[in-house]
Length: 248
Image 1 (cartoon, rainbow, N blue to C red):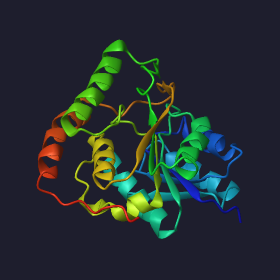
Image 2: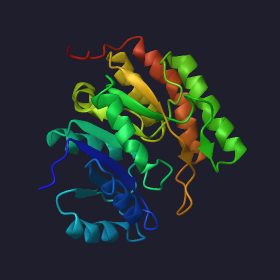
Image 3: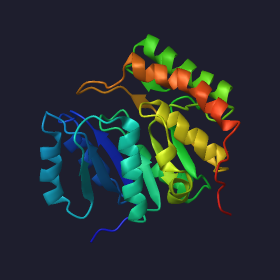
């Protein structure tokens, strides 16, 4: 059996053009990663492709099939619980569409495994604006949303909405996952903010984000609106909330 201390969680909905290639890219890395696909009943046959690949990679590729589109946040929460139960030491979030480069996974791993990070964020904005093939309007919207979130919450992270992240298992064991409120991209903000409030070391690793070439983006204005307006409530609630603290 190919054991690993790390698992990459990939939520999917209609990713038939990308899913096989992203799985093979991750499994082609020198470091051994496992993959957990959270599949939200894609009508395009994404799950069928994963099931076929599970026969080829029976000890490394896993899948949770859900009944429909239940939100990005709930997908990751389901994956986090699954990974913690199976005692993976490092748990990753990554998109299926190659906007996150699989070659950066070992860099995020090193940031936690060797360099003292509890949460390692693949950051588009720690060293300028590293985004390729996005319309300028969307780049500006994303960049200033992260600046806004940092200003409101006080969290020392440049890319607060980033979805390319490595968590130590201890972080996911400490955060009350069932109390995470947001389901869309604000979920990413809430997880980073909560980890920071729990006194975990959140670090950023510069990455280049490349817009998807295949398939359809899941971003829409309501998702973005949740991310922008939800942070005010997040900050307000934090004044009256007691956070569990990292065990020394």
